[in-house]
Length: 240
Image (cartoon, rainbow, N blue to C red; front, side):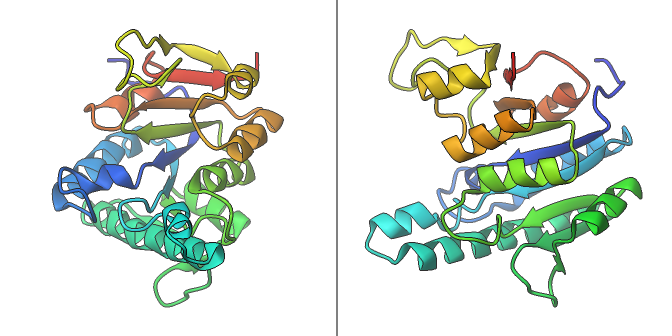
């Protein structure tokens, strides 16, 4: 494999559900260890790495809202779930001697730094991984939107969405055997076809700020490494 990184500064959006492993809820130590090892491989390339992780393995605000809970309360709980995941990943990385900082959009000084853009960039320049927790700090916004926002704020060159599927399809591959995966897409086509990559707020924000997005399967070993070193995996989305 090519060992030269294509990008100097990236943001990796990790699916919270991916941390469940096969247990259906919470965090499995095996998945945390796996994710940490995959990130360490990239850190050795001297790439500046930031991370946003979802909280769906613990609590989803939309699901809570649909069950009758107040949406603001449900989203606040979802944001706190991302903090738990962020601390777990931080611990796994630090055990591998990778300097890591968690910055939270919701003040909680005893366990995380507050999100300060210039401080986050300084951490990255010093070779530290920065994990952005608690979404945007506001209800009604997903962690996908938070990932695009943070990527733009720190001037990341690309946003990687490491998830549970191997790319973006024209229809649900679980239901349709003839589903076709796209190698690349324009943001405008994602919006026109209503493809379920991220929520439309995140897609619109990425398109407006010309932020490329690459979607790939987190569970395939070395996929993060391959993406950062320019290999063609998953689906690349950008302004054409």
